[in-house]
Amino acid sequence: MTQPISQAAAHLRFMRMAPRKLRRVANAIRGKSVREALVLLKFAGVYAAEPLERLLRSAVANAGANHNMNTDDLYIRKITVDGGPGGKFTKRLDPRAQGRAYFKRKRLSHVTIVVGEQPLKRMRRAGPGASLAIARQSRGAAGGRRKRAAAGVGA
Image 1 (cartoon, rainbow, N blue to C red):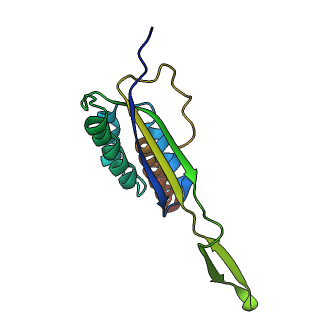
Image 2 (cartoon, rainbow, N blue to C red):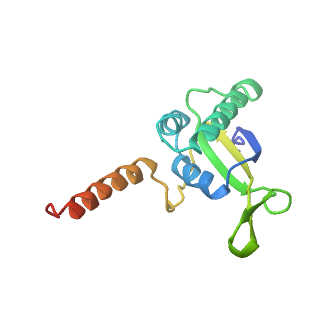
Image 3 (cartoon, helix red, strand yellow):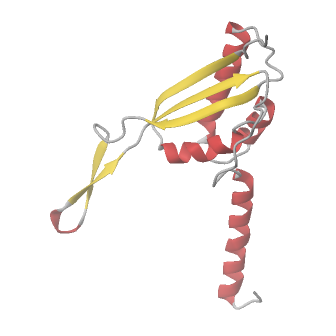
């Protein structure tokens, strides 16, 4: 008989950030070891990385304090980013032409991170935006090509 996998979770509710922005960072750290994920979040350079780093540290602390797990070799077993109540009471008006007004929906997010001592057996296919560092480097290189092309220097 196999032992149940011990897991620890941490929840972040009503985060004042759109779920789409948080999911980009969550996809990058899904399934990784906690040590690797913390390094990636520390140097991601994305605004959404800071609250996820704090939440991951909270999940690791929960694993050590409440479940007597070894915090040195934990893995991210599950990370979910769900939308919160972002359409009812967090609306702002944006003035438009001819006296009209458009609504801006200020979205909220609920994030859950589950860590465990064993890695996932089967990794999900990486979705769009899963590599943060590569996206930042390629954007800088493309910007340089555009500047040279505009100046008339070789393509």
